[in-house]
Image 1 (cartoon, rainbow, N blue to C red):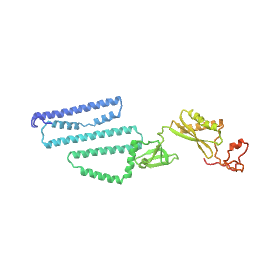
Image 2 (image 1 turned 90 degrees about the horizontal axis):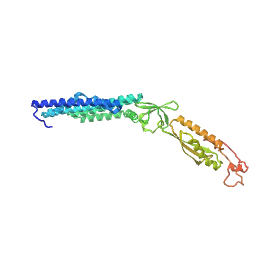
Image 3 (image 1 turned 180 degrees about the vertical axis):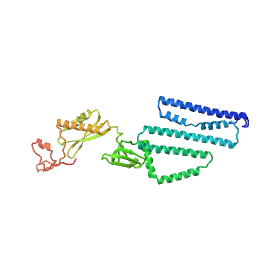
Image 4 (image 1 turned 30 degrees about the vertical axis):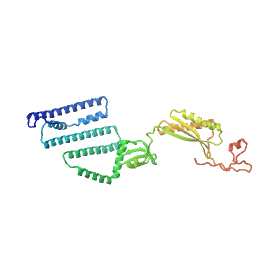
Length: 373
């Protein structure tokens, strides 16, 4: 902006001083008014955004407002080039410093809110490390920007920091890998304390999430320890976040069961399962000729992820199926190995035990031993 009069005139200095004082007072008034409005909104409807904005604006320094006011007032004066450069650099430095103070205030407010809503000590420790690193990066970037603003060549410094950072990262890559994996667990939350998870052939409840390791309490009471980096590279099954359980079981019916009863079995099972309010029946089908049984597959969905309740429901369903088969005289299959001795008069193709029974004959059984399930 072109100055109105030479800087040596008294009127120009008075105008510049008035602009500096007036703009500073106006910015201070806007700051106070905005903070008061944000606090009122936060009291009416509590929200993190209003609280964060209020705390950030509360960290606005009057010296920053004064530097901006002086810079605006200097625009109305004719100053030597070196003086203009000094004023502008001071104003830019004040702006950078105020921006980093706002960012730091926002990070500290976020940390306070996070600590108030989380009781897990391990998660708090991880969050403290994360917030410290974020603040360190913020202040480092601001420091480099201020050096560059005052004319220092920061290229060599940045290159040195980069080389040093690479050397430190290579020397501590395992530790840093587990540390960043811990931060990833904290932010992404694939599991939390108390969740029951399965990782490979290990399963148990999450007992501790630390900076380097995560520990599970196995079903046998033993403690299973994973490094955070290895844990995130594995496939994790989180059973606590299960919405429902899909349950499938097989009913083995004896060979020789009449086809009319075979056709009724799916309807009988459907009626038993559908009678419960906590399950959704899916299907029941005769799906396989087994070595010693006729196999029916039954599938239903239990509406709760609770394992104990699921087992209670399955216990009741299987018991009711057993009672129903007793009433209908449907025989469960038993694993048997039957050996027959054929006679020359037997027709080719063999025989069935229930066919011989209807004919009044007895099948010659040489051996009957139970087989494995």
